[in-house]
Length: 185
Image 1: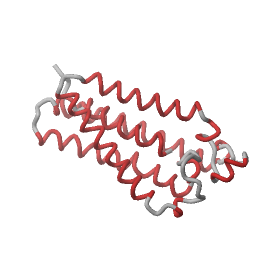
Image 2: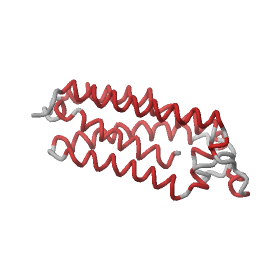
Image 3: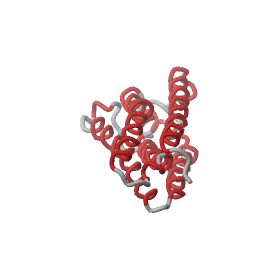
Image 4: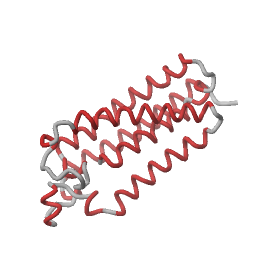
């Protein structure tokens, strides 16, 4: 969902800056850009494309049946490129904020931002299940006929696969960044 993808991209960027804290604390731009390149690759391979896919093929779900009442992203030609750019910039922005916090010696704040993103995401879904856990169009949702996401096996398979891919990728890249910088003293 657009509403949770953006904060999660930002939070993930800050968390990965935490993993690269040893490199970032040197203040050398080469270390910054080496770490950032890993974050961008991770983001592109595991986080960027699934929300775009959902926006195209499960528009009502991805928008939580909220501000966009059309049946398809095609009714909003600006939305797909704008969301792509916003999602990409949220990840890079999160990394930049995380890097700044690391350089200021406030590494724990990166975890707090990550935690806030996870808490917000969980709250968004749990507190409004009729919006966040249903498929179909806005008209379906408004009429009360939007099917629950759990009734669509291919959708659920995709979501489970993507969540696993993201989690495995995040753990891998976090460890990679951590290993590249060595354990902090």
